[in-house]
Amino acid sequence: MQPKQSIVSLPVYQPGKPIEEVKRELGLKEVIKLASNENPFGSSEQAKAAVLKEMENISIYPDSFSTELTAEVAKFLGVERDQIIFGAGSDEVILMLARAFLVPGDETVMADETFSQYRHNAVIEGATIVEVPLKNGVHDLPAMLNKITDLTKIVWVCNPNNPTGTIVGREELKSFISQVPSHVIVVLDEAYIEYITDESALPDSVALIGEYKNVILLRTFSKIHGLASLRIGYGAAHVDLIRMVNQVREPFNTTRIAQAAAIASLADQDFVKSCRERNAEGKAYMYKQFDRLGLPYFEAHGNFVMVDVKMPSGQAFDGLLRRGIISRARWKHYPNHIRITIGSQDQNEAFIAALESVLTEAAVLG
Ligand SMILES: *Cc1c(COP(=O)(O)O)cnc(C)c1O
Image (cartoon, rainbow, N blue to C red; front, side, top):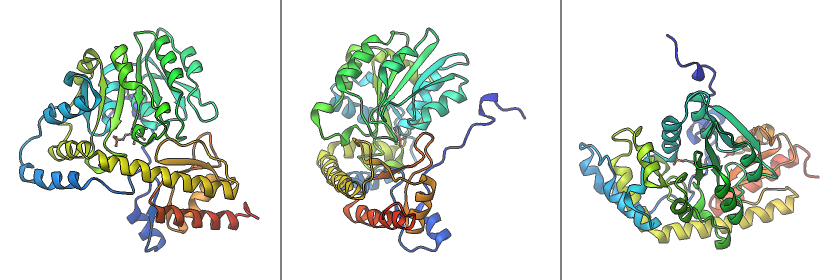
């Protein structure tokens, strides 16, 4: 058997460690997972009710075009229905973009470091990865612009960026997009956009897709909507771009249950708002504690914080794990940083207590 050359040495995605596995391995009763930016407040009660109701219909294939959900999302964004495409999570929209556009020899520009799935899917398609270092944890848009050539097909902007949590300035983003040649697709991955509390920092992404045919924004129901296990997210762009991506979409790529839950969750903006507010409170608590412990961190705009723990992150990860906290560590360019999801107040307090104990043990704290 001979697979595609591009997949032979491809690293397998390393998800956050599952809670059950950690409990088993370390014999712990209580384990808190703050590793995958899941919603600590669960999901909307209305979404749960919609899931139960839709169970009656699970023997029937889903609506391939997600007609009802498309109408709701189009209304929510203020765009036309044919400007939206759904995926099994926005991960699948990333996959579809790579599949539809990238061939060996193409170049694709992304930050280093950023969300792993841009690189992963581009490598599978045999494209050449052009990585541009973050500048103080933020996308360096002018440097990324400089890396665009006639061979460039897609530029990825993760905003807020995973793992650093930083955002690019609104005007800076506009200026960047206005200078990107029209043959290059700009992907604005906004998985955490709903967590932004500072209105003046909100990117004008919906206006941008109206103005530029080569811009696509990606959003998901996995993060603030708390529907990660149902796998549903979307892309929004000019109708011509959406039509191209649709060519490679599997006919039944999202489920009935996911579509029903997403409709209900989108309607429950009170839940979204309350999660945004509680996340902001949790973030303020984390900042205060990190300041007290003398730990620097990147300004966070999502539901996670990248903090410098002043010791090898793998060692901090292991210490936290033994104390029942699952974090994310071992970043390529940030050997002393861990990424921690902002949890509920109880979870945040448990995390800080565990971190303080790890830092004391490692003699980072006096
Ligand atoms: C979580 C995440 C996604 C995708 O999540 P899905 O569950 O596939 O919708 C996309 N981009 C970033 C930056 C993320 O953190």
